[in-house]
Image 1 (cartoon, rainbow, N blue to C red):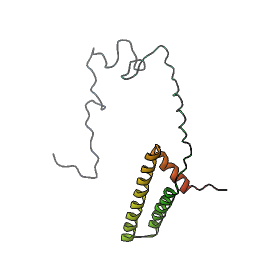
Image 2 (image 1 turned 90 degrees about the vertical axis):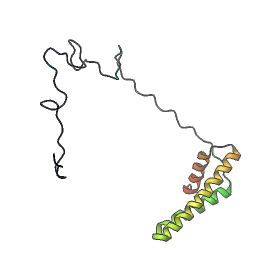
Image 3 (image 1 turned 135 degrees about the horizontal axis):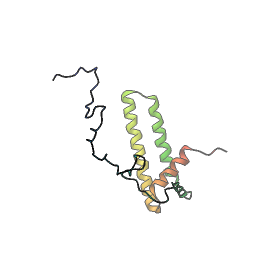
Image 4 (image 1 turned 45 degrees about the vertical axis):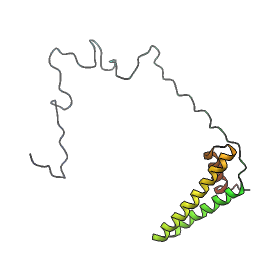
Length: 144
């Protein structure tokens, strides 16, 4: 048999006259059905039958724990501001200049990450929460 041309769809193999599984012979009991059961009442795999089959809505998720505001040291804020500024400089560059600036930005962000990790460990705080609070304070200055 030769190869089919690329613009023609694959033919599906059929096992019965109209596709799907072959029909059982005379006198054979259809699969997944007992005597006298219609397809609607036949048990399906993975479903449990109970006397009370009401759907119970899922319980609401518990509220996220609130982290008390942390007094962040000024050096962490300054480092984050500097890293953000290095990131903003990438937007106006092209080619090799952009790649070089991206490396500068990456190094500045790594420095912030290490400083936050060390400070959070010293204070006994979760690093993720401290980083989140730091970014929130630096990037979202309150109006007023």
